[in-house]
Length: 397
Image 1 (spheres, rainbow, N blue to C red):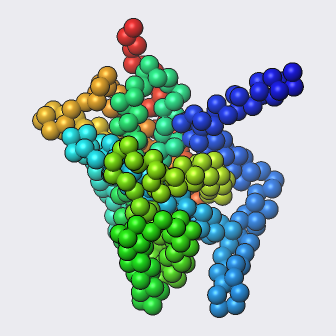
Image 2 (cartoon, rainbow, N blue to C red):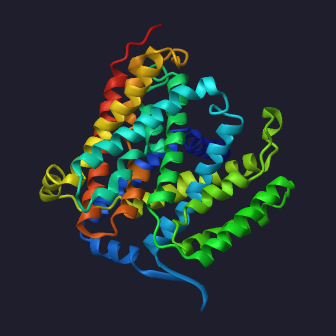
Image 3 (cartoon, rainbow, N blue to C red):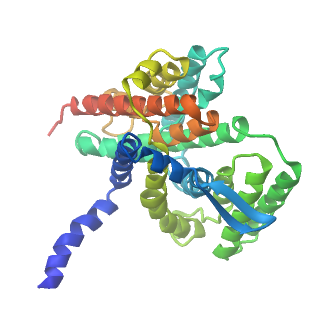
């Protein structure tokens, strides 16, 4: 009898966490909690906690960073490791393997990165904030899919979910390249050399089919630490490690590969622990009438809002329309141009990645707060507009 009662309680919880949209919903909740805390009486304690230092290691072999930096430089490396494995999986056995299937989402993603960056650059031309052009380029896949789940499967067929997922993965790849090239500090050649040796070792391990997961992870940690010291953003270590993880190209054998096992082991931790922690640490900004009025007149605010909300629409939908019109690509099954337009609006949900690039663009202070408010505002507007478009789609029985 007690077993049945417990089953009634646990079954809905287990079912929720198995749902693809669960991570996006939890992310939204954590973002709201962070905003409430940052605008409450415990805001100073919240800020003090995030900026308190933790040291790991001993003397010369130690790393000392604030909790916020451990989250953004450490935990986010694991997030990027998962993203890297997703990209590799899609390239080897997924949607990005077939050129015919990839033309539409890849073209849409490229348009959705270029146009927002141009819009931001126009608003911030010759301004000290010009470095922030990478902020409106990204799409938060978890948040976007979480919002898409709210419209129901009848209005959001599998084809549009696949399109949005593939688009966001290509978007993430673009963001990774941008971070690696344009958001890098002064380079330490010694640390960079250590990183290079580790990368070559990992590639050789892949080539000779080394099966020790612990050895890959150990070298991944060394790669992360050396990149952190080199000046290149340490989260890139996660992607580089992912690209060297062995994978079997045959779909039938793929599930027995190291990449498949690692992805399925780490993804839940990334989705339900790391990303919520990131949201709690980074989404907490002070909202006021002054802060809202500033983002509507300051170049950084206008660049991010118009870049995410308008730029993503023009870039994603515009590129998709042209590819379909000139018969270079075709619409997925049961997907219409209205679905594509709705997805292009959801592409404006930059949230996680945009907040992350904001922290790289602006070291702190008023500019960072303004950028974060702009990202959150643009993401919410894009989410609401996307839901309205999908809700307006007629269901055919």
